[in-house]
Amino acid sequence: MKLHEIRDNEGANRKKKRVARGPGSGKGKTAGRGIKGQTSRSGVALNGYEGGQMPLYRRLPKRGFSKPNRLEFAVVNLGQLQVFVDAGKLDAKADVTEDALVAAGVIRRKLDGVRLLAKGELKAKLNLTIAGASKAAVDAVEKAGGKVTVTRPAKEAAAAE
Image (tube, rainbow, N blue to C red; front, side, top):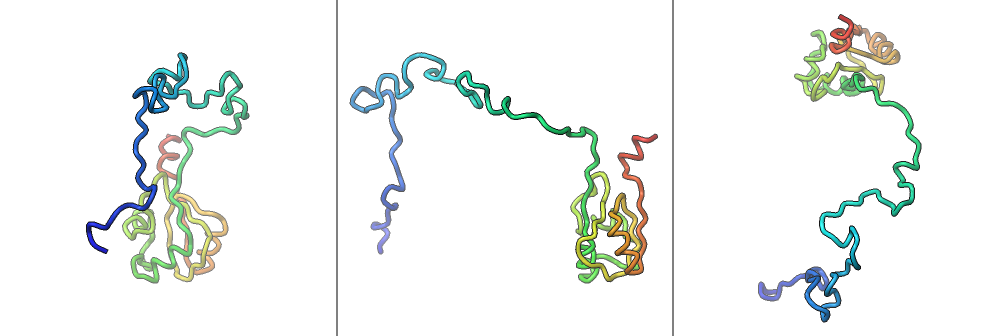
C-alpha cells in the first residue's frame, strides 16, 4: 500500500443533501418540509408533542416525592477500609475520622457526612468517628476489636440549633 492509494471505505463519506436547489435535485422548492405550517418554518421545537394526543409525560402518573433538603452521605464499605489499611494508606492505630478518610483517598469528599456499610470484611482494629453507620457495620467493627462513634451530620446539627 502506498500513500496515494489510501482512501475511505466505500460509503464512509456521504455527500451532504443540498435542499431547495431546484426541481432536479428531488428536494427542491419546499425542501422536503411540505407546505405551510409550523414545522415548515425554521426554529421549531416540538419535543414531546404528539399532535393533539395526550403526551406521554402527561399520561404517566406522578409518583413519589424528592425531599429538597435530604442528606447525602459518602459511602464507605468495611472491605474498602481493610484494603486501605493493608496498603498502609490508613493508620489503624490512630483515630479514623472523616477527614482522615478523605486524606487517605478512601472517599473523594465528605458531602453531608460519611456512612459506613457492612460490605466486605474488616480484620483491623479501627476506632472510627463518622456521621452514620449500619447496625451490621458497627457489629463487624466491634467484633474486630474496634469502636464506632456516630456523630450527627454537620447539616443536621446546624438545622437543630
